[in-house]
Length: 127
Image 1 (cartoon, helix red, strand yellow):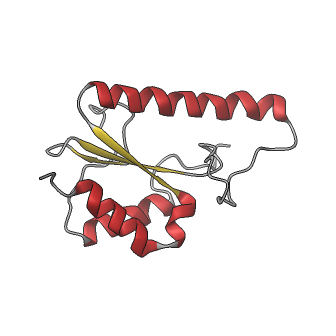
Image 2: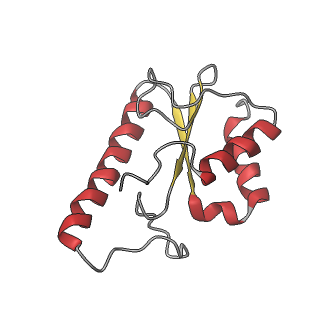
């Protein structure tokens, strides 16, 4: 478990590159924003989280990465549930303080053009 990275994962770096190429600048893992989002856009009050499908239990049936562990379920079930509970709590806290959040799932990075368009639409100023 100590070899599992919490920051600077390949999916996160890919999302950073896509966002930067769109011309958006961001802060990484700011301590003063609830949940320490992977990318924070303070002037826009928006945050992007990059979630691994397994660790955050992506519930999309099309996702082939997320799966419930079949062995040692007494260990994994509470651990993964705690991640889900934390994600909900952080999203609610961001909503409460007026921030909008977006979650990019690891499996979505198969189609970079689509995810780049979604990021651009999310970050574009509202008219």
